[in-house]
Length: 98
Image (cartoon, rainbow, N blue to C red; front, side):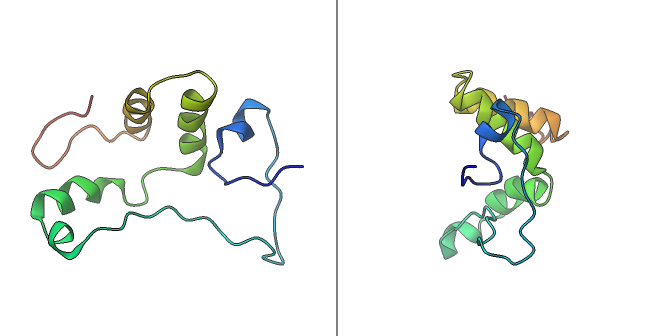
C-alpha cells in the first residue's frame, strides 16, 4: 500500500488499484491554477485555460505523469500528448499546441 496523489504515475506503472475512501480519511486532491488578479482578468489567459476545465480525466493525467516519471519524457512532450488524448487541439487564437 502506498499513499499517492490520484494522478501519480506509479499507479499506472505498477498497475495499482485505487481504493475507495468512503470515510474521507484522506483529503481529496484537486488540481487548480492560482492566478493573480491582473493575469486572471487577461482575456488571453482566460481563453487559453478555458478548454482545460473538466477536460482532463485523472486516468490521462496519470499516464502523462508516468511518461515523465518512468519513461523520461519531457514535461512538454507529456503535456502535448495529454492535450491530444483529451482532444484539446486549439487555443483561443487558433494555434495548435505542440
